[in-house]
Amino acid sequence: MNRTFNFNAGPAAIPLSVLERAQKELVNFQNTGMSIMELSHRSKEYERVHNHAKSLLTELLAIPDTHEILFLQGGASLQFTMIPMNFLVNQKTAHFVLSGSWSEKALAEAKLFGKTNVLASSKSNNYSHIPQIASFEDGQDDGAYMHITSNNTIYGTQWHEYPDSSIPLIADMSSDILSKPLNIEKFSLIYAGAQKNLGPSGVTVVIVKKELLATTSSNIPTLLNYETHIKNNSLYHTPPTFSIYMLSLVLEWAVEQGGLNIIQQNNEEKANLIYSAIDESDGFYTPHAEKNSRSLMNITYTLPDEELTKKFLQQSAEQHFVGLAGHRSIGGCRASTYNAVPLEACEALAKFMTAFRKQN
Image 1 (cartoon, rainbow, N blue to C red):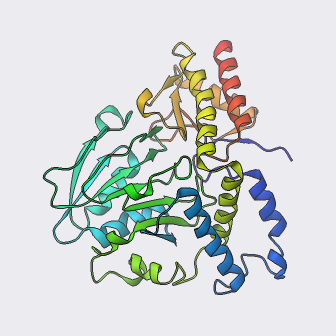
Image 2: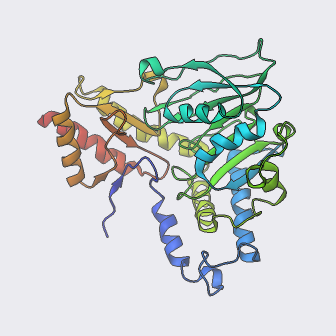
């Protein structure tokens, strides 16, 4: 079977070796006579998978004992609600840095629970850059937390240095977690839907600082209370067992690659191939993101006109490139180069882009 060049923004590419292993184990997982999807979430076989995934995350991201790891459902979008429901308390203010559509959605949900404030925004420039905040120290005694979105899939921008904050820093890292090393201690809460770099959709990883939990509101519905899931090792109710199993396989693959330093180097090499094709095109391809805010995960660009864009997407599809259409809100093109997208796919796309430009 021929594999496509998968540049989908999410759900996105999964390492081929992971898919092949899951295929091999699908019907009879570890001689249980059952699929992993059929195992009880209370069984010792599944418990080993569950805890193995937590252990691998701890190893890869160097997560300290000060933080808890949760596997939740509802996607990153549910976290937009859970975070203010749990932590926007005592008449405090949730501060937001707006860098794209997902940070806008997080802000809209927080407004339902308390006071909010926009610290900075690049909306007036069509979110073409990250509004950098060097520090956040003075006059913020009322701050419940600061929220950022670390990578913006629609606009192709990414934080390369995270802001300093005297209040808890919370980050939606759905589209760039596991793509580079992190200083976890800098963050009070990180959340990430799995369907970009962690595996298939269905599970959301939350890494939360124990100190933050001390500020939790009372009278929270049981299932929306972080403490419920911490006390029960994310097993209060049936978790998305297959997604967590796939997560564990992707994490094993990440370890086999050499860890996050090597993965970051690979991601830089892949992205540079495509950005070079853009930068060397004499304006034929126009990048959406400013250079100092360019994402290594989502590369966004436009062509001279709509007809050429349609032609580019049609011919690229004929060459087995998938997922290159830009988000419907801004149009153009987008190549998502997540961890599992191989170097060969990026080499092929850069070559195609160069050939297409010369022909047109």
